[in-house]
Amino acid sequence: MSDKELLYIEEDGSLSFGNHKLDEKAKMDDFKYNGDLLKCKTYKPMTKLEKNGMFVYESVPGTSVYHFTETDAGVEFEVEGSEDAQITVGLAEDTEYEIVVAGTSAGKMKTNLGGKLSFNAELAGSGKMKVSIKKA
Image (cartoon, rainbow, N blue to C red; front, side, top):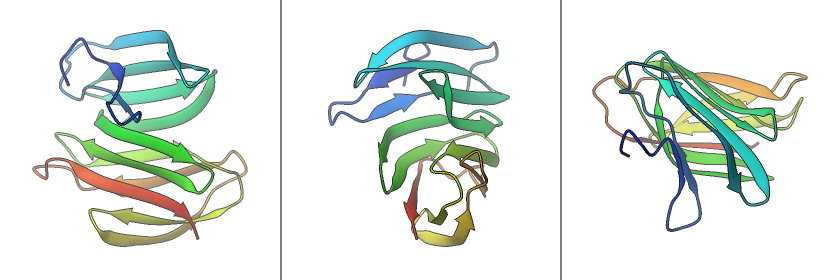
């Protein structure tokens, strides 16, 4: 992902966004994807994605996200970062999900009334890591 590609569609139709290496905040607004408008803000301290003004993804510190796909069952993506990160995703509210990071179950968690689910990813020195969050 180059510095200029803050938000783009992969050949398989999935979404990639963010750049955890940027020193200064960069953003892209009004990106059209599957009939929705997306907004991405990213740099070293934080990466955030919104769809139609609603929360989708946030990481602290910033991450680069590849092949992000959303279904009724949950989300899947690859994530990369320079440091361990807290990642929050927007899902169905008051629903239990199973989180799998790099092939290892991180357990089951229930979303809050806002539908947010947060977990920690040990990204430092790990390269890209696959994350799967599916309804339990």
